[in-house]
Image (cartoon, rainbow, N blue to C red; front, side, top):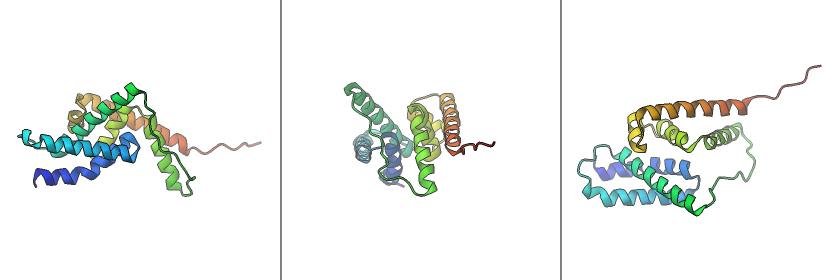
Length: 164
């Protein structure tokens, strides 16, 4: 498979990860587009790319960190999705609880959890993408899973009845 075909195959996963980081479809699309532009412009200079997908996620991660820093400097408001209509099915409620649980995680824990659980990267690849030691990745993943499980259990508890 050619490098361009591998890049094209990775686009949906890049979009998914970008949206999970930014929570705004237009900003996520801009981030993916910038990632692809940077990847394609540096392609001739990268002689030995063996793993295209982790390389693309590394570019996306670095761009998102740069954007986050510049937004923080400008003190821009963070976009969060708002529920326009109340959910009517249980899976809407579960999805809402999951999204709230993800938002409650620290940014570091959320990134590791999404890269491992959603995108399917192994610990070494995540460590390379985020520029962290593998032990830090494993620690953050464990804490993120525990925090998310606790958050989800808290949302499922039934209120207690008063018995007289």
